[in-house]
Length: 262
Image (cartoon, rainbow, N blue to C red):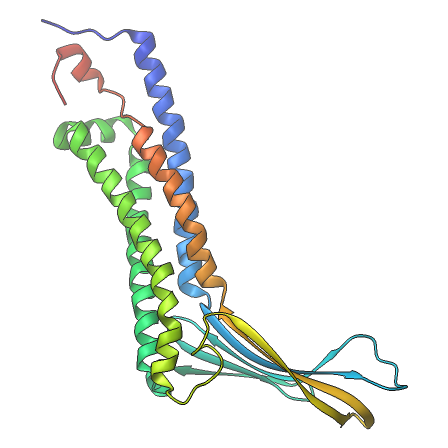
């Protein structure tokens, strides 16, 4: 018995697959780029900024920065940025091992591992879906693995990316406890809250020969760009998961003409 598919139906299924595959490749590429950015960007920051504004009869529009010290944390270590009252800025990088903050380093290591796992997996998925644009390659894979097993593998790989992103994002919330464990004398800052700011008026001082200047110390800390970038990949990956689930491979022509099951 020879099974012959209805040609218009096959053509429609073929072009629907192509369109959804274009969407999947586009979304995979976006996620791949975002995960690369997340691996390169800072994930946490802590800064202490001293600003001043004139009081009394002196005229001063708004407040201006006097000096600051900022700490930026990425997967490799800490960058300390200092600006003095002469507006000269210096940057010094120190690895976590040299800083002696092993618990903080462990939190970053976990997030880094899952970001890289997600990056590797989404890279493989992107390559596979690009290859599936070629009928010959796609048909050979379908005959070799089978339609259902291949769909299951692809769906599981996308789920793996989604889980990796979620663990990298949620696991980083443990940074507060890590700061506290590495500095038991800490009473304010990242060791107490994941994100916050505290402002303290230090009174009036003389700045640039101007007396009666009110100086304010502002400490601010919280997640940086890398953490938010990983968060942004979660809904995109969830969307591409739906696309992969809905997108059905078109049945190879040989299978339609011979009745062979995939």
